[in-house]
Amino acid sequence: MKRLPRPRNVPPAMRDQDSRATVSVIIPCFNYGHYLPSCLDSVLSQQGVNLKVLVIDDLSTDDSASVATRLCAQDDRIEFRRHRDNRGLIATANEGLEWADGDHVVLLSADDLLVPGSLCRAAAIMKEHPDVGLVYGRPLLARDDGGLPKPSGRWRSTDIWHGEDWIRTRCSRAESAMSSPEVVVRNSVQRAVGGYDSRCQHTSDVNMWLRVAAVSDIAYVRGVPQAIYRVHGASMQRSHVGPLVDLRERKAAFEAFFGDCGSLLAEPGRLETQARRAMAAEALLRACRTIEGAVTDEQKAVSEYVEFALAAYPDARQLSGCRWLKFRRRLGMNGSRRFPPFLATRAGRRVTFYARRMRWRYQGV
Image (cartoon, rainbow, N blue to C red; front, side):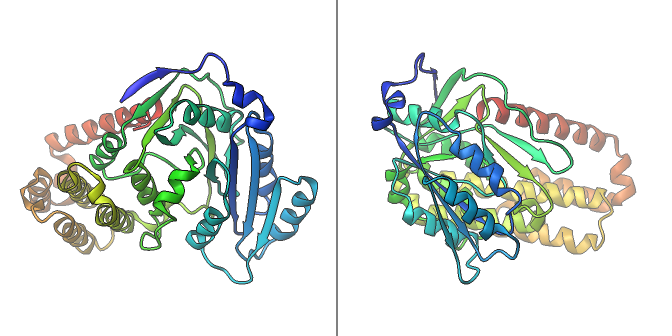
C-alpha cells in the first residue's frame, strides 16, 4: 500500500465540462419512494463530473414510480425504467450495469446518499492513476431515529493498494470493507469482471469487490466521507439474515471468487485457506458467545456453528477456538460467565473490535 497526497488542484479535465469524466449512477428502487428525492438530489448536485442517472423501479407497491416519473421530467440527466415483474436486487443491478456507458459507474440504493464532491474525488484519482479500478471511502451511517449526519473533514490523502494486497487484507478477516454507496468503479474494469453473481444472494457485493481487486488496484479516500448509508428496518442489511446465514453467504462469495478468479492471483491457495480459517475462527467464537448468552436452542446453534467451521476449514479442530469451546461446554453458561480468564477474554475482544473499527475508519481495511 502506498499513501499519496491529494491533488493540490482539481485536474483540468474536472473543470472543463466537455472533458469531464462521465459517471453512470444506477439507482435500484423498491418501495423507497419517500427516500428517492433526497437520493437523487445528492447525485444531481455533484460537481466536477458529467452525470447520467438510471432509476429502476422493481415493481414497487408504494409511490416510487410516480415519484421517479416526476423527478425524471425535471432533469434530463435522469432516465427511468419500471419492471413489469419483481426481479430482485441482483438482476436489477446487472440491468443497470449493462446500461451504464460512462467512464465510471456507481450502484446507489434509493435509500442512500452521496456526499458533496465524492464523485469528483473518485474521478480525479482514477484519472491520475490508470491502474486504479475502484475508489471507495468511509460511509457515514444514518438511522431512522435520528437526522442525517453532516459530512465533515477534508481530503487528506489517498491510499492505493495493489489488488492482491487488498484481497489479502480481506481474506485475513473474510469480510468486506465496504457498504456499497461509497464505491465508484471504472467502467472498463466493471465490464471486464462482469455483473453481480446470483450465487451470492446477500454477499454479491463482497464477491464483486474481490473480482475487481483481482484485475486492478484499489484506492481509499482518507479524511472525508464519500457517502451516507441508511440503516433502518426495511434496509437489506446482511445482519438481518442472522449471523450463521451471513457466514454461509460470505463463504459462498469467497468460494465463487476463488473458483472464478483464482488463476489471476499469485498465491490463490494460501489466500483461500486464510479466508476459510478466518470464517471458521469466527464461527467458533460465535459458538462460544452462544454458550455465554443462554441462547434458545443453544446446543443446536452451537452444533451448527461447529459444523460450519469444519465445512469451511477442515482443520478447525486445531484452532484455539475449538479448545475453548469444549471448555465452555463443560463449564456451562454460568461457569463460563464467571470464569476470570473468560472475563479478560471478553474485554480483549471489545478492545480488538474498537481497534479494528478505528483502523477501518481511517484506513478503509
